[in-house]
Structures are given as C-alpha cells and as structure tokens.
Image 1 (tube, rainbow, N blue to C red):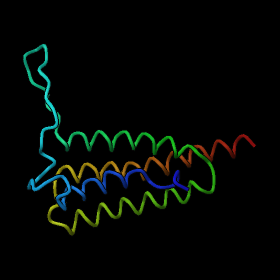
Image 2: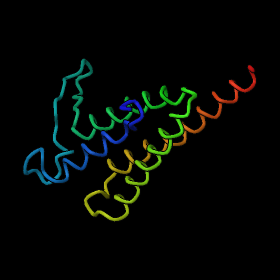
Image 3: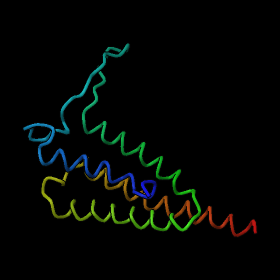
Length: 133
C-alpha cells in the first residue's frame, strides 16, 4: 500500500511546512544557505534549502519513473494519485500567495513531469506486454 503513495507528495509537504514556519521564524526559509564549499577554481559553491528540495524532488522523480514500469492494476491507482498531487500543486500555486515562487513552480513542473512520464512509461510497458503474448 505504501508503494502506491506518490512520492512527489514529500516535496509538497516539506514546502508547506516551510510556509507555516516549522523551520523557524525566517520569512523565506528556502533562501537559507545550508553549506558552501570553496572550489579549486577560487569560486564558492553554496547549497540553499531550495536547492536541496529540488534535488530531493528530482531523486523522487527518478523513483517514480522506475515505479511506473510496473504493469499491474495498482499502477492505475498510482497514476491517479500522482495526478491529484499535481492538481494540488497547481491549485496552491494559483491560490496561495506565498506559493508563487520559482521554487514552487519548479516543484510543480517536476510533479507534472511525473504524471506525464508515468503515463507514457506505463503505456509503453503495457504495449510490450501485449505484443509478447
């Protein structure tokens, strides 16, 4: 049952936890620098909470695409739930003022890619099942 939960809900929840102030009384916690490293070139590479959240979302997108390769009745439910997560992103982006940021838009786009990739990969995998029989 837990395998059917769309993983893109995790960045959605984490972003909203930042909006309600779980990470402290910072106006925009996503701009907080987590760490920085001096590079051999002399430049400084820094990682913010927003960067880490996008990285998390991309890793979860990979897992979602791997999950989409399953051909079972459960995959239909998984795609439906992923679509609902994308709709939640879209509604929040359109209606919540603090969600109108480029970070949230990128997360919403990743959720949209999850929905599209899930359907496309499932259709391709199921067509192979039909051709083999």
